[in-house]
Structures are given as C-alpha cells and as structure tokens.
Image 1 (cartoon, rainbow over the protein chains, first blue to last red):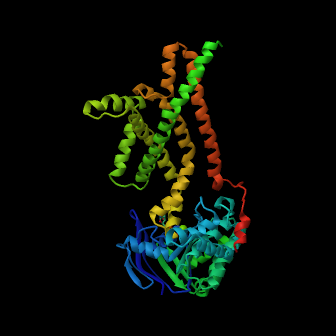
Image 2 (cartoon, chains in turn cyan, green):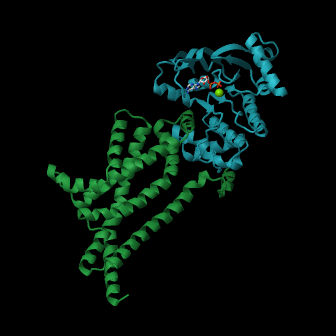
Image 3 (cartoon, rainbow over the protein chains, first blue to last red):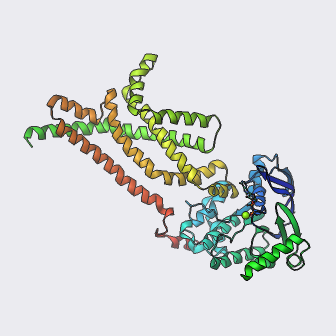
Length: 249
Length: 236
Ligand SMILES: Nc1ncnc2c1ncn2[C@@H]1O[C@H](COP(=O)(O)OP(=O)(O)O)[C@@H](O)[C@H]1O
Ligand SMILES: [Mg+2]
C-alpha cells in the first residue's frame, strides 16, 4: 500500500467540505474519483498534497503514519517529493520553457545536475510526444500541449503517485484525446494514479477502481463495471443518469 | 548666438558633465540599487505576511510616500544635526533617495508579486521546491517582469529628482549650472543646456528600458521566434 487516509476532514469556515474520507491506494492502482461539481474532489486532492491543510485525519504514506492535523512541514515536504500533481489549468511555470518546467523539480528541489536533469527532461517530453517543443514557453503551446508538459513534469521526479484534478476539463474538445491517451499509456505502464475526471468512458476503460463522492462523502466505490452498470446507491444511479443525459444532449 | 554665449555653454558643458560623473550618475545608481534592495525586501515581507515586519513595512512606506522628498532631504541634512546626527551631504542624499525610492518601488514590487497567480506557487510546491526556491525561480522573476516598466519609470523620475540635492549643497549637474548662471547671468541658455543633458540621460534610460522589456517579454509573447528548438531535438 502506498497511501491510505482515514477520516480526512476539511471545512471552509462553517461549511464542511470533506466529512471523513477513507481511501486506500495500492501500487499500480488507477483510481477514478467521480462526483458532481462542488462535491469536494479538488479539496480532497489538495489535502492529500497539503495545498490545503486538513482539519483532521490519519495518513499513511510509504509505511509512515501521520496525523494530518499536526503534520510537520518537513514531513509535508518529504511526501510532496514522492508525489506529483496535475492541475486542471496546467499551472506550468510561465517564465520557464517546456524543458525547464520538467527539469526544475529535479534541479531546484532535488539537487540533480542540470545536464542529467535535462536528459531526464527530454525523455519525459518524448514520452508525452513533445520533445520537439522543449524550448517553447507555455504561452506558445496549446492547452493540450501544456497539459502534456505538465504530465511530463509530474513524471520527471519519478513519483509514487500522481494526482490528476480534472486534467481535461479546461481543454477544447478536440484536444482532450491527446491528453487522455497519454494518461492511458501511463496506466498501462503501471503508474499509480488518482484521477478526478468527468470523462466517463475514460474512467470506465482506464480505472481499476471508481470512487464516487457526493457532498463531501464517499458514497460508493468499486470496479468500473459494477459502478456503471450495477450501482448500489441511489445517488450513484442519479449521477450516472445525469451524466448520460448530458452526453445525449 | 554670440561667441561669449558659446564660450559659456562650452564651459558649462564641461562642468555639467563632470558633475554628472561625480554626483548625478553615482547618486542615481547607488540610490536606486539600494532602493531596489529595500523594495524587494519590503515587498517580500508583505507578500509572505510576516507578522510585525509587515506592519513595519507598511509604516515605513506610509511615511516616505506621504511626505515630500524635498522635506525629507532638508530634515535629514539640516534637521538631524540638531540631534547629533551629522551626515556628509552626498551620503545624506543617497540615504534619503534610497528610502524614498524604496518606498515607491516596494509598492510596485508588492503588487507585481500579488499578480503572480497562486497556481504558480502551488505547482512549485508540488514539484518539491521549498518556498525560497519558488520565490527565486518562479515568483520573483515573473513579478519582476510585471514590475519592470513601472520600475524603469521610477528610475527615470529619480534621475531627474536628483536635481533637488543642490538644495542640500550637493554639487550635482543642476548646481554646476546654477553656479555659472550666478557668475554670467545667462539663465536661459544654461538652464536649457542642463535640461538637455538631463534629457540625454533619461533618453538613454528609455532606450535601455525598451531593449530589456523586449528581452524580458520572451515568455509573454506567442510570436517569439523559437531560435534553437533544433538543439533540444539534437540532444536526444
Ligand atoms: N478555498 C475555499 N474557500 C471556501 N470554500 C471553498 C474553497 N475551496 C472549495 N470550497 C468549497 O468547497 C466545496 C467543494 O469544492 P471542490 O473541492 O472544489 O469540489 P469539486 O472539485 O468536487 O468540484 C464547494 O462548495 C466549494 O465552494
Ligand atoms: Mg474540482
């Protein structure tokens, strides 16, 4: 097991956004996290990477246990170095080229010599099909290309797990495919991933597990086939129905 | 124009240029460099919301932006000796200009820092960088890009404002011109001359500003020619 969280809680002011979340992630798992907008998916991922501070809960990462309420800065930094995050709106470093975006985590955070980092960086850009764009700045790339650079950046530091927060939601429809196919390849190569997505076909075909959240709680979890074709919970059924209706429109 | 005036202007040019080398240029360079150091420190303190220091920074900026530069110069040069602090007039000018300009530039830098999207900082944390590395590699360079045009304007304004130091006996370009006017009674020509020298220096600064703005905007422009995309490919 790489990651487990128990009873993760988070409120913004009086609003309880996460009401005690339990998750376990094993090596090689691809987990799709589904749920309506506002159900707390982004907040959950952000708490897992300490971009938000959880109000309470237990985390086990790589065999070490942490109390999320009292976790130390040094522990947060250590866990972050073993994870990666792909944002909905890419968040590429605007003042860095594609290659520098990929290598910065190696050089500036891990002290790897520039030359070696650039070799790794080029390999990662090659993986996402953008080696020929190494010297482009983010603004010179399409959304799909930016997100693929962001994935290369996530891969460069050889993380134990990658968190994806709606990696294709900010993209024009014609650019979604190129990003999904990169993620699909990663899944096949055994990368451990927790993916928030609204792409149901993708979730069904790529994920090993589905987690369905609503209103700050996990409502249902299971294999994609079961979840999509024999959901146990009423709220899951409603969610699947509403998604299907959207797609038919 | 009579030969007499041509002679006066020739003499004036030599003295004004000498004063520029001895006073105006060093005062501008040293003063602005110190101002930038103060400004970056004050802006970063406020950006990071460091308790107590932030209040101090706000207070300092409030005082120096809220009072006239000339009054600050007089206070430091003529006022402070009354409490036993006697400063050399040039040193006094450097200190006042650094503090005054630092307060303005701190505000410019602070708003430029705050304009960097939060996602840049978050992405930095997510690749494992610590706060200071992120500031150094990501946030400050981007903020500096935003702040560069207003900072350049501040520098040009400061160059011209150094003419105020003649009031506290510093022998700058303007004082050089005033002295010759006092002797020759040719204010029209000599003040035109010194104005043209200021114009010359500020024009140089403007040209430099344009040049560096272009360089800095590399990552802000979709049209930038990708010069060596080939070399990256070659590395594989
Ligand atoms: N920084 C914040 N401050 C206050 N409320 C927030 C903040 N971030 C998220 N929320 C609220 O938390 C809830 C869950 O949001 P989010 O995690 O973004 O959901 P999802 O990603 O599933 O759409 C929403 O009601 C949202 O308004
Ligand atoms: Mg979200």
